Image 1 (tube, rainbow, N blue to C red):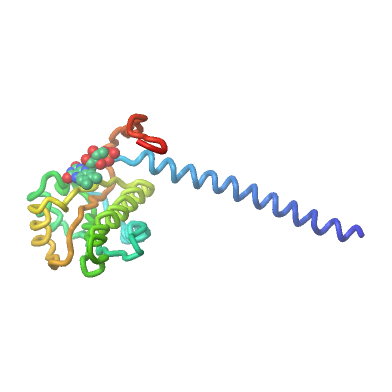
Image 2: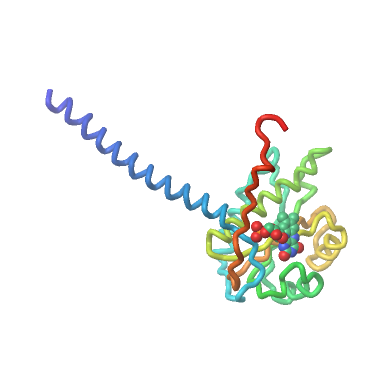
Amino acid sequence: MKKIFVLPISLMLAFTSCCQKNATCQTSNEQAILDAIQTRVSVRQFTGEEVSEEQIQTLLKCAFSAPTAVNKQPWDILVITDKEIIKQIGEKFPNSRCQNNPSVVFCLCGNMEKALEGEAREYWIQDVSAAMENLLLAAHGMGLGAVWVGIHPISERVQAHRELLGLPSHVVPLGLAVVGHPNEQPEVKNKFKEENIHYNKW
Ligand SMILES: Cc1cc2nc3c(=O)[nH]c(=O)nc-3n(C[C@H](O)[C@H](O)[C@H](O)COP(=O)(O)O)c2cc1C
């Protein structure tokens, strides 16, 4: 009789303590994610210090974890570590911040051969943008700095990056993620504005 009660009670205790552990763990995980999202800022000045191959792979994994329409994953990412190519981009487009010592530049592209057909093809833009945001957040979470530099839909920028990076015609560069160790600490901007929120109907 005693045994019948002791076993379930000890199981219950073990379960409760495990739940409490997980609850604490989940809360701190949650907090870390929420903090990372809300404290991300564009960083445009870098120290030039190396970003390791392992860090690059982590950034790529995070980028490719983004959701895509019908799970098409209509993307390709060019990883640019060649300082000469980074310099060329910086010279042609000072707005790219490539002249400010980044360690690695990712060119996030839509691949029209992998995209949906018809009107839905344009979902590639949201898909690749989601990957971009994931990469920026991951960089921030890893203590790196990053800035999104727009390419598509500015045709001059698209053409120039096609030439500089040798992109085939079915590949459209959406933007660059310019990444490095931060050499500035920009203020986080408050973008939460009540007037931009509409509940239920406009
Ligand atoms: C589509 C897009 C294009 C952007 N292009 C550039 C750019 O060419 N150069 C640059 O320095 N920042 C660029 N940015 C970064 C924005 O300027 C920046 O996100 C914005 O000022 C808000 O600041 P925050 O990222 O620090 O919150 C771009 C951002 C987006 C989303």
